[in-house]
Image: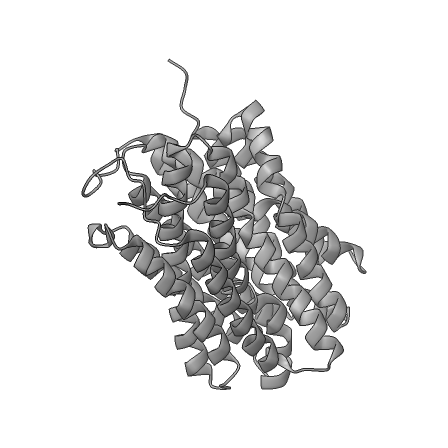
Length: 386
């Protein structure tokens, strides 16, 4: 006799914890640890950009791999493998000082996070759709903000104990392992409730879908500049280590409820308009990080970045899924790949600009312009009423 599936709420919580581990910690804990690494290991902004981009290259490769039909029926195994790898790889970052090792580890961590992102979504979203509880997607995506806030709180504790950058990675691995156990308890042996048997059909050749893929890639390129270097910007401004971790914690706390807020707006204005407006709001945050002086600029940047980037990620995926309803996993993976490709280029370009100029102003302005373009393209992608 087949065991009953967990409740939709319990599955949404499982998705939330999985994203907290693989995204909030696995991908984004690099941001608050980065200034200590740059100082302790004498890394340049360009070095930091290459390490970040290695992670995003892994994310791109993982997303492209996840789009293949080979993964059908293996979603649960691949998701848990990704979570376990995220924990181990985070700890390994604290056990080396080699640039080559950093690149390899962060590449593999990106691969793992993409697997968790795509396969956990295919499990959770299919059950939420079957239960008519798509509203719980906001809880699932809120895990990114939860992971950012939790890892920032951890770093505040480590800073007060005068721990170095390597301790941040080691304890992030421990926190990730605890998250893996919690996901196992919440999700159990559940697999996707896929209404489509076998391999999914090819994506439709529609202009609106192509526009959303391009807009999403531009968003990946632009948001990641501030998401990677925000705490380094604070360090350059002499804000102090506790303030650095606080700024990133503020970003996570703002991110946790952001999906709910932007989903409410999308219900009134439509997904495409909400996507465009959230891009405009993020432009203010990205610009404030380098233009507004003192503590105000970084805090405003943290609130507006955290309060938008997770939501834009969700809104873009939802819009694309509406445009390709028969191939949910395939479009999820293709959008994630476009996003990942943008992320590879963003930190490299920003790191080189920062190294050439000695500050992050030109890199942030570049990111703000790309965000504006992303919002305009997404707004124009809205299907016209017949």
